Image (cartoon, rainbow, N blue to C red; front, side):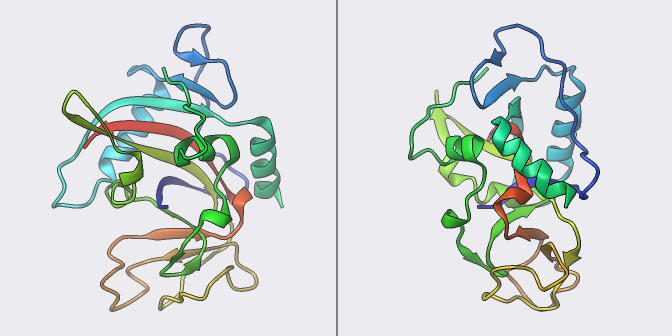
Length: 214
């Protein structure tokens, strides 16, 4: 599954938490979801990032319906932070991949083999991630709604191969992640936009949920 990411190094967290008020937009359960208002700093930042990174010219730029700040379980946050240093209700259905990610993070057991082996795939291009959000598609009153996650991903030292390798299960020694860069990987028609791959579950954590019309 590919998701929308904000590039983050091992020591600096780019995304900041919105101020939380005791209103109906704040769901007090674990994980927490907080609906952002259009004048919130995080709303403006995430929406601009989502829309400006929509690069596919053959796909109409979507309309954002709502943005949600995700507050993951404490153990998930602690696990991610440790790795970096060295109006919505969840349905809680076991078959809901979105809910499972919010509660438990990304699981390698569900990862599939991509161009760079078996890992957890992300991209900075929102329109590319849209291709992989089919499982989150919902229809209401004749309108298609889709969901996408904006994640914090600890990239560390990035390895940029010159060709793809389906056998990867980890980065080469001395590296923390792999970047499939179309400017580096030549003559590969399936790689038109970047993709980032991590091979450890604690390397990534969801920060925002974007609901948009497809």
